Image (cartoon, rainbow, N blue to C red):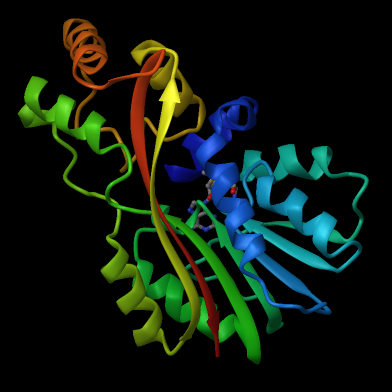
Length: 254
Ligand SMILES: C[S@@+](CC[C@H](N)C(=O)[O-])C[C@H]1O[C@@H](n2cnc3c(N)ncnc32)[C@H](O)[C@@H]1O
């Protein structure tokens, strides 16, 4: 399901992914001075973090593992000038390619997994002792204004699952065995020209069908119209409307 949704969004994702780019930059800026022999990236999608990795660590052999087959096909073509990147269809919760890595990175991806505990445990296994895991995650407060507007319009269609909280992610990482070296927890309001542009942008990011903003049933046309009007009125900001993104970046060791 998740794989299919992101596959459908592969062509348009980059033009609408400002918060994700900022998070990927924060993941890179958290890395220590190092030049690893090999890298594992989990959930590369269209390659925003991958691009930054190619700049920071040119030519380092990189396994880029994403559960969405079409994302992998799209990025394999897009990054064809980088023969050091090995594009693999796989799941962060279970992936094992036979190697342990000195550096594992992931941005804007692991909040999607069904079982965060399984993902953290698997990544711990995949990391070399003494290696680094740099992780950027979207958290529970992301798109909270949209959740609230939606809840008021169609309470019976409220999403049952929400993104993990900062404390949940931190506890999960620590339980898996990771040591926390550095962390950053941020809440940012992003401005969009209007509510329609905002909904279009999050749809293009591939998030409207998922845990972040969709409920157990889609809104009908009238409810959608109401959502746009209410959002526009309730969350205005300079020249448009705003939406909150809550994120965390962790630097972890084994
Ligand atoms: C929002 S995109 C983020 C892409 C990119 N890392 C970035 O920073 O912009 C999330 C990606 O995570 C992938 N993903 C979701 N669950 C996954 C899982 N369990 N294992 C591997 N990839 C996963 C999706 O297919 C999608 O390509």
